[in-house]
Length: 195
Image 1 (cartoon, rainbow, N blue to C red):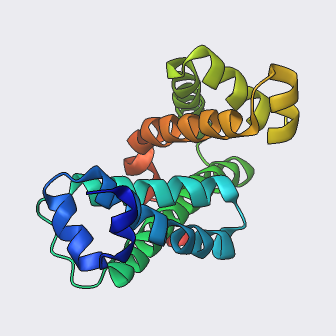
Image 2 (tube, rainbow, N blue to C red):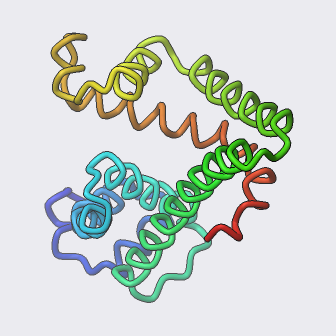
């Protein structure tokens, strides 16, 4: 079937087709719905990289679950999936922030400075480990973005890359950091009462 004929097929029929590994049907679903998902995150976060990352994650998940997912209304399904991803992201950001605040509070209040120092050292070691896991170009882009505070445009110019390539490397670096810092969840749970 020609790609152009997929335009007239309903979402439900396209979902049936992707259950049978039809990648053209999946591309059509993506084309129809990605902007809505992207705009939803952009409206709430103002972060285009985050919006792109979460939108991509939702569609990757849809493809991975294509055989088993029971979806009655794709638009509703995507709305809930993006919302859930965004809330999960916010929770992880809040936990990391709360952990850092807690360490500062413990040090200021004269708590156990050895314990606070040890936890801070562990967190810094995990961050260093995440950076070391990155491929060289991703590591360079991450360092310039986070430590050097360069914009995407400036990094692209300095490294002679397209802005899209820089955004890709930043997205990959953030995925690596999320994976590495996930190990800190047990430490972060004890500070949730701050919120």
